[in-house]
Length: 173
Picture 1 (cartoon, one colour):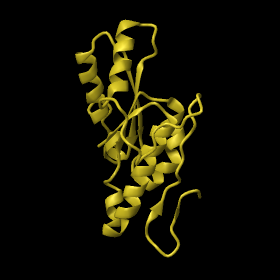
Picture 2: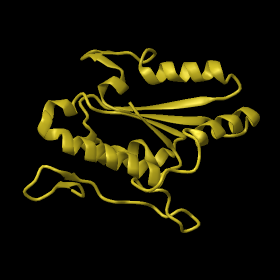
Picture 3: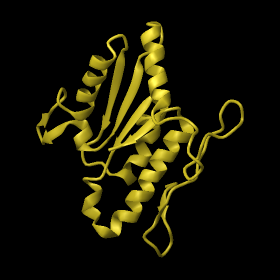
């Protein structure tokens, strides 16, 4: 596995990856100074572009998380219309009626932040979303205080890869 525990310790060490942009300059890496733009600026720009031009592709949102994201309430019930990202999409559609929004539900019941690292390419990066909602923590809590370092490092790696390999804004829930 590319992601392993530090020998003799309990600190998760994520890889420091950052893809080069087509112009050959790396995008912002975690820890670098913040971008010189307002929060969610790219997402709002995409909404404006889609509203102005119906030929633009839909504004794409990926919801990446655990069973809460998936919409699971019990073992045999999934709430497709009431899950948080479906409600968020309806709010966006009401606010921006000339814009089309598509949401990919990449929630996996029982998933943890550390486990999700192996799904990042398949579930987020290959789709090149405009916005990524990241929601992990409930299953990670089963690891107790000893798992906090791994949880934080895994979330850091998730955000860093999304930031380096897409133009997506990221919201941690």
